[in-house]
Length: 504
Image 1 (cartoon, rainbow, N blue to C red):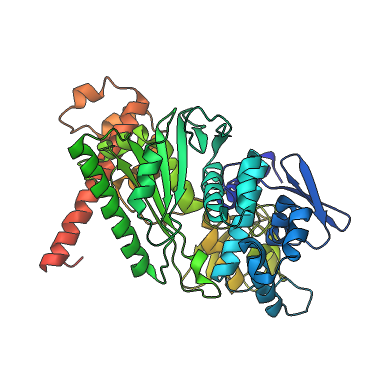
Image 2 (image 1 turned 45 degrees about the horizontal axis):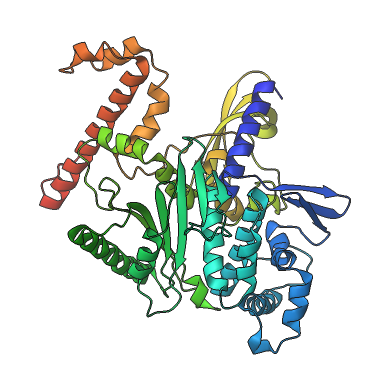
């Protein structure tokens, strides 16, 4: 294996791990004899029972809450025990009912209780692994009357950590002023934000009341207010209805503040709803989230842009928030493996997976030959891989291979790294012109300036374009390319709606 291929493998491994685990500190774990070791911050935990990361998470809240707390809860009548203690008992009984007794790794549906418990465990792990949970937050977490608010705060902190922010907790012991929960520093830009987390605890508490409380906090940096609605939502439509109501409350509160001249500070507002908290043993729930600007005019849902350039410059202005929201979409799942391997490939039996650069025995004109896989493409509808191989004689052949259901599931999760090197998914859906700009910019970022000017020869501002650097020119070319593609798509949609579309 060449040094370049090893380098490509390492890039793919790191990329897939980050897709699973986020941009904070990676999971640090090794096996020693029959023991699985896991590092969390400066502490080491170990067990022979941990085959998956979920196995470790099952035990982790007990380590955080402490043996004395666990013993004290066990001594209480069942109804008086802490919500987390009761939750773990219900989840334990559910998981036990899905054990097959074969010694193999089993899977089970993710109902509301299971998701609530494992997400709490994962968030506790992320905070302690990246920055350490403050004692006052842990104290509130142990108090069943304050638990839900503290759990929301930990969820918010963990989300920033997964997005690669550096988190520094505020000094809550300073009683001379109000404090936000923590300061989040966006590593890419160095910009800092004061983050305040508020959770609606009862149905009679209005979202805008929690928002007002957050906006009145003393913030040393631009404020991010994260409000948890905490409302049931059994399907996508119910989730959308909850968010629409919250958006109306937010906009009404902003309009009133502006009209009355209220001294409420501008803020990025994130509103989330995690109905798994109320789902119990049901799997019918849909989580949802939106972000909007309170007194920030160019960070609004439904904002209209008139060019890709305007979209790009707005994104650059609010880059930290765009990166945070991108991470929320990308890093939504709890990792199953410790090393970033796909679970459907890590725990399967059968023939070895296909890896670019690896040698295989493949059919060629009725005989088996040794050949190196140079490139490959998945045809998802056919559940087939089309591989380009180079034989030891130097000939190139195309060989097809069927994919199992497990391999298809792994490909769906990680199409870019399915073959152990990074192959950008050219079939990805472009949601808006900015996606097309992002897709084309790496390509034209390497195109010589002279060639870009050739491409733009007929532009009315060609003389001005000649004065720009290659990077500036690549930006403009990709922006105009995205604008052109978007206009063509819009015209095509309008033609279809009007019934005037032309056959190809």
